[in-house]
Length: 462
Image (cartoon, rainbow, N blue to C red; front, side, top):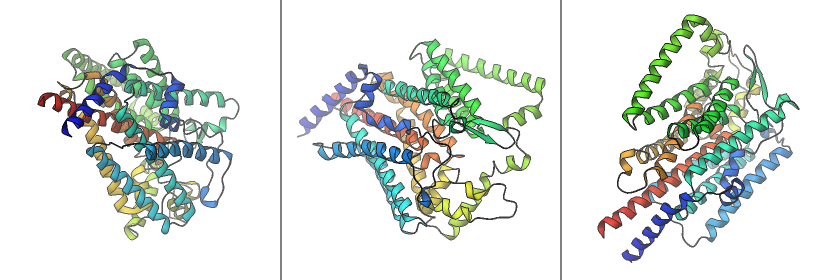
C-alpha cells in the first residue's frame, strides 16, 4: 500500500515538472479552467446598482447569476463524478474555515430584514466556494502553467479596461462618477472597476519586469498602463494599497542578489530626492490637496464619510453580536440611520465600505474572527511557500515560487484596498471574484508545493 502511494506521488510530481511547459491559447485556457470566467464579473452595462433588497432586478442581474451558476454547476458535477478527491491536509483546514464562514452567512438569513436576499447571496457564496474546491482538486492532478495564469488574468483586466474606453463615448455615466469636491472619477462603474483592474495589471507587469519573465518592453508598457489607470481612477485607497504591494514586491526582488539590492537602494534614494524636488517646486499644501482630491478637511477626517459607517457597524454589533444579516442587513438598517452632522446620505449607501467590517455587519463577531483567521492562514501559507530558501533541493525554482510571490502581492493589494472597499466580501461584485481567484491560485500552487515535498521525501527515503 505504501509503495502504491509513493508511486502515485512520484507520478503527480512528474506532472508538476512537465505540465508548466505547456501553454494554451486564451480561449482554450478558459475552456479548461472556467473559474477564470469569474474574473470578468461579468461586465454589467448599466449605471448605478439595482437594489435587490426591494425585489428589483434587471436583465444584467439575471445574466450575471446565470453565468456564475453555470460555472459553479459544472464544478459541482466534476466534483460529484470524480473518482477520488485529494486535497492536502493544510489546505483542507483552510477550506473548512471558508465553509464555516459560509454557514454563518447562511444562518444570518434567519434574522436578516430581507431573508430572501441574504439567502440568495449565501447561495452565491457557496457557488463560488464550489468553483474554488473543484479548481484545487483539478490542478492537484494536472497543474497548469501557473505563470500563464497570471498573464491571462492580466489579459482579462486589459479587456475590461478596453471595454471601459469603448463604453465611454456612448454612455459616460456607466464608467464615470462625479464626486463633489474632486470632479469626475474614471472608476469603471459596473463595466470594469478601474481601481481594481489597473493595479492588478501594474502588479503583474512589475513582477514580470523585475524577474525578466517576459519582454522588458512589453512588461514596462503594461506597467505604465496600470499605473496611469490607477491615477486616473483617483482613489486614495487604491493608490495606497498599490504602493504597499509594489513596495513589498520590489523589496522581495532586492533580496535576490547584491546587484538587485544596489539598484533598489539607488532607486529608493532617487525617489526621496525626486519627492523633495516636487515638494520644493509645488509646495506641500498643493501636493496634499492633490492627493486628497480637493476634499474638505471634514471629508478627509471621516475618510469620505466611511468612519461614520464604520462607527454605525461597531455600535450596532456591540448590541447585536450576531450581526445584521448577510449583505441585506446593512443596506436596510443603514437607511434608517440618522445622526447629527452626518456627512453622507444613508439612503444611497449599500455596504460598509470595508471588507472586514462588512463581514462583521453580515454575520457578527464570530464571522469576523473566522474571516481574519482564514485570511491570515492563506497569507502565512503563501509567505512560507514563496520563501526562496524553502525551494532549495526539491522543486524547480521558478515553476511555483515566482507565480506564488506575485499572487501574494496581489492578495496583499486586495487586503489593503479592502480597508476602504467592501466589494471583496460581497458576492456578485468583480472584486469578490478576483480575490477568490487569487486565493484559489495560491491554494492550488500550495498543493503542488506540498506534493513536491512529499515526492522529495519519497526520493530521499529510497
